[in-house]
Image 1 (cartoon, rainbow, N blue to C red):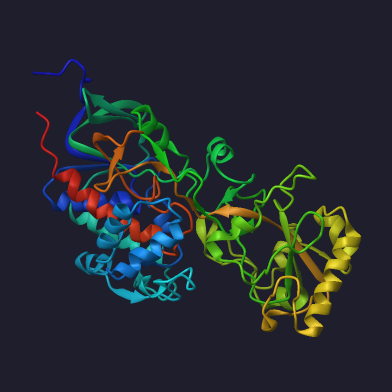
Image 2 (cartoon, rainbow, N blue to C red; image 1 turned 180 degrees about the vertical axis):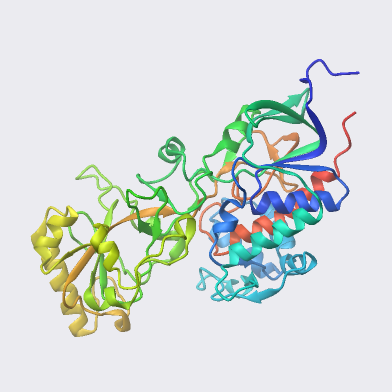
Length: 477
């Protein structure tokens, strides 16, 4: 007999996975392997941030040291039970890749925080690509696509999830917009929410993140859709302030940003007053945002958003000042000597600090001049007394000068609906919302500092766990 609380179903399946990125694909493959009938719903082409990732995934050693390391860099934001689940599942990521038919190779360096005890357990690997220049995220995504196809798991691309549907005390299906019409898909075992983060949702970034504006490198489809759908069912949220965010460049021609990566050492970073504020070569890549989000109470502004990187002629000629092929703008061919970007006006050039300050919008040109002279003196002396920059990196701003604005730019956000140790999404009292699971960057376990490769590792490990658990749910009649 039809349940009067439920809509008229257009389709029935066992498991609906919302979002076909790395976590969603792994959950779908695993649930399918367990015998469940699976449908994947994806509002774009698919791949999410996984397809755009540059390098590696974590496959930690399954030891107490690994658990203590993650606990230390989580700063109390993640329970021991969640950390234990993460380590247990991700420790077999290499075996899983091999089961899918992929080859594994080591990726260095390992730990993002080598000074923290247990760092030796944070081992990173990548799926070996079919070509020498294939990036790790692309090779992983290609492997997952092959496995989805082998299992005949349908992917409804360019289909937007509108609502997760509930009957009584459990989730029973989803409403999606498919080919211009609203469709209701019944999920007899459960729904997996794996729709990614909120890097491109300005309202959520203003509400939750430190500093503004903050741009993004990755998938423009990450607009926080899953957060709203989960909240409608009473989900609690966690880790909403946690991000992985290096510094980068934002230009009007592109929605996404370009990462900062200078091949030479002849550069400094200054704030809006023209002053250095950090050891430029000592910033931890994924936590660069922490160096710029301090609020200037006297000026009543984020005086380091934007900041400015100023570099010299030898550094310009060393190569592109970005990582070519990174993120959503990977198709753009940045010039080898940065000359085209100077011509476009993205990078400004000058023979003097005063003129460069005016072109960049730094109002105190005299202070910028003194900052540069102070840095040159440090280079001559071989000692950076102000920020302890390593002697070998003290290369002093020679010849023509160049500058470009720097912004905090998200690789991804970690926040979203809170999960329990089974991957079920829970309400503010910790009660599971029955038959609703979460995976991936939407509500990631990374609550404070981020370990490189941690998200792809989570997609592979906890994506599998969720696939197993949702497939084991009893069938709705």
